[in-house]
Image 1 (cartoon, helix red, strand yellow):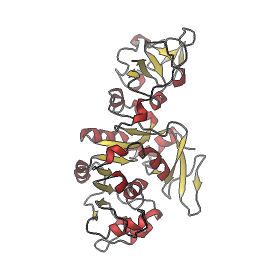
Image 2: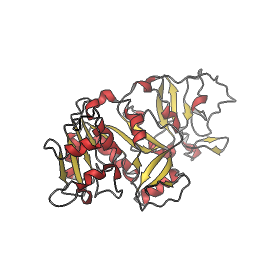
Image 3: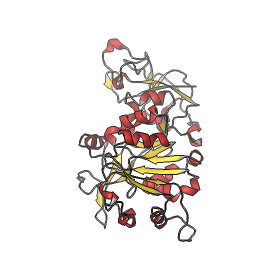
Image 4: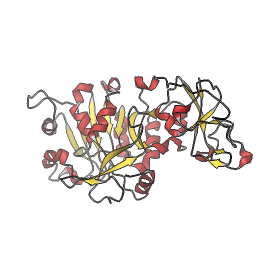
Length: 354
């Protein structure tokens, strides 16, 4: 099973091709339907012939009431894309689009075969329709390129699984161009200096699903299967299971405003004060006391249950960024990691009840 260490290694090696499973996309996206009506959706890290994000939005184009769906890919994908094999026969200027960065724009989806459902056969038909366009990109399809930035400007919502190694840059671009988004990243990204301020200011939060455990991702054929939990299916496609992934979004959903049930009572013995922070230690989200109004340090996984109407985020440990504790750190300790009786704890987020 791939751990956070595996994700970091993947980023350093630029092994960033982790392809999200359709089932995980379906479970998450159903909570945001109201946000998509009349909107242009961009999947800008997604080969349309391979991406389950493109597949989901193409198949639910009318159900969601989309205005347009745009998908772009970077230098062609290393995955063969059996999901869209029937589309790979579509040629443009004598060259197959799978060999070049390109974009697909969908503005109309109809039930071409009259079976009452929208399936991939219909999408293949649409690419031969003048209302839907496949275009080769002039550049390499990198989301940071001027060409792709212009495509981004046209979109209302970005939904994708960006490269793990470029998560900071990807989010910064979304913020710069004031886009709504739903993306996948490592849970440890919550304390990145570029990410935590957005979470603290309630401009970014966790999605509805994937709050624990691991998820399966498809990977390219040349990806090394070194971790436990990897598999190869009957068609030779490779999959790995990854711990610590989360959905990140700035689109609200009803369930985010559900209060966390609190039932424990505060005591000095059960909730010691940090040696080096002006706050008490709460080792698990489920242990947050119902009768304590002061500042508490909680694990970063607290954000899975975070209701901004119930709690206020004050800061996080200085080990994640200078000044991040907002004055809670006792600087004379010279230790940025939280300490309880000299024992170091993992990174913490500081909160208090509203």
